[in-house]
Image (cartoon, one colour):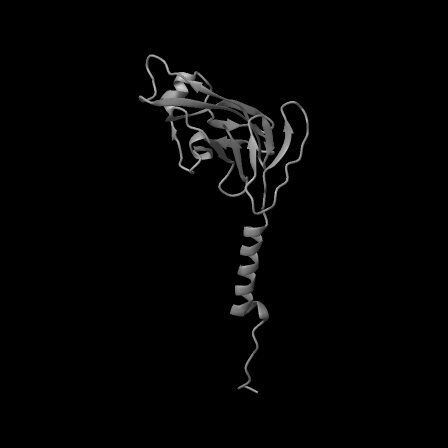
Length: 186
């Protein structure tokens, strides 16, 4: 009997731990899906915008879009001429996107216009964010911490060639789970 092999418990075998790791990673990766959904229009008409899962959901100016942590509203889009200290390059103009973010989570959330917002043209090229355009717009900045249940309103300003059409704002609430909102600007 001294030569008998002692069986290890199942939890000490390599294949058990391999399966456990795969299950945990699969649960983390697939467990927090969050698709943006339109919750209301500014005229207080509640609508549901459902599209096929393989299509990107696109919204328009004035729609209130709910994500996991935020409600996002593009209030208006306007042109900024500049001022004596900050003017767009010749042939360009500043486009300001006035937005409101509401923190609907139960904890404070950090907001960064540089990492969360992006304006792209019809070909998917990212437009250049303009700090000088923001100063010329004399609008609030979309940076800081929003307490639970609070809102922040400000502008995201880009410099584009005059007459550029097909612009869209892309808002990414979080790298991990909040989802993406795309709003047609013009």
